[in-house]
Image (cartoon, rainbow, N blue to C red; front, side, top):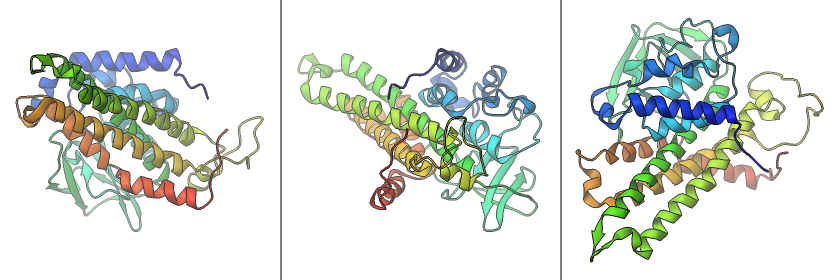
Length: 343
C-alpha cells in the first residue's frame, strides 16, 4: 500500500508546527499550563473533527494526524486529545467547543484518572450506569501522582451530572489513536535531541555519535518509529472507515460506501487501534531510554528540557492502555483466527 499524506494534511501539520514553535517553546512548559491554546484555536485546531454545523471543519481523524503528531513533538500541555478528539464524539450542542473556549477532560474505561481535569470546564466520566457529563463546579478532584508534570492526573467524584445517551467506544478508539500519533511526535523529538547531543558530546577525543554502539541505538529508535507510524496511519483509517463491521456494531448502523459490500471481510478496528498504540508506545519508550543514555545523568536534571519529553513518553505510553494491554488484544485477535487484511 502506497500511503502518503495529501498536501492539505501536510500543510495543516506545518501550520500547527509553526504555531507551537512560536507559542509553546520549552520555556513555556515551566510556567504555563496551556501555552498556545488560544493560537491553536484561532487556526481551527479544536474544530478539526467537529461537523460544519457545530462550526467545525468536518475532517477525518487521519486528516488531523500530522497536526496531532506536532503536538507531541512540542510536548504541548493540556487535555489536547480529550478536547480536540474525544469531545466531538461524546458531546453535542456544546457552544464554543470549536473555538477552544471550552476545555474537556475525560475518564473513560481503562483509565484510572482524568488528565488535566483541573483545567477542564466539562468532564465526561464513565460509570457503571453510563457516561456522565460533569461541570467543573460539580466535580471534586483529588490529585494523584504521575510521571509527567505537564500532564497532571486527578481522581474525579461528583454529585450532579447529566447522563449521556451514547457509546464511549468511538471516542475511546479515536483518543487512543490520537495519543499514539502524539507518541510518534514525542519519539521523533527525543531522537532529534539525542542525535544533536551525540554530535557535540565527546569521549576519548571523539564525538560519541561516531561510536558504533551509539549509532546502532539511534538507528534502532529511528527504525522503531518508522515502523510504528504506518500502524498509526492504518488505525486512523480504520476508525474513519464506515464499512468496518466492528464500528457498525459499536457506533450505529452505517451504510457501506458506494461500490462496497457491507459485509466485506475487513480486520477488526480494535486490533488496528491496539497495534498502533502498542507500537507507538514502545517506540517512544525506546526513544526515551536511548536519549537518556546518550545524555547521561544530565537527562534527569531540572535544568535540561529533555526531562519534559522523557516524562511525556512515559505518561502517554500508559495513557488509554499500556503496551502490554494492547499487545494482549492483538494476540487474542490473531490467536482467535482473525488474520484478515484490508483492503
